[in-house]
Length: 157
Image (cartoon, rainbow, N blue to C red; front, side, top):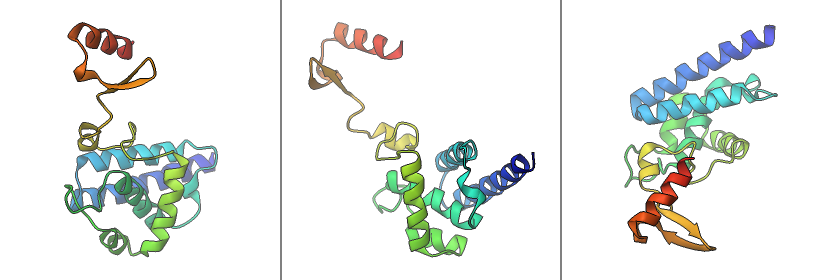
């Protein structure tokens, strides 16, 4: 029972610290994604954030999400550099980078990830309109309307 209380306490602290950074520098989308990652971590058999500093975990969660959503690219909004994250949490960039890799591996995060991409990234996904037909990758918009409708119906079943 003590472990559940400790997990809940640390989970709440992570939610607060990541939300604070998102409110100050990012947006609601990132705040929701941070919450999703933290909740998934808290349900793991071996909860990763039970060991280590919570400020490093908070920074690493934001960093991991930022990497797959082009947060560090100035041409995307919102934009934050890795140094800003490290400075905000008082950690080193190399430490949070290493822990972010662990988080990305833990949840198989990648570019245009359906579960961990921001709304903007999902909308810009170049593969979102692609379907496989007889082993051939085809843009759904290039198909006749009746076939498009059949495919969409099957995808929603």
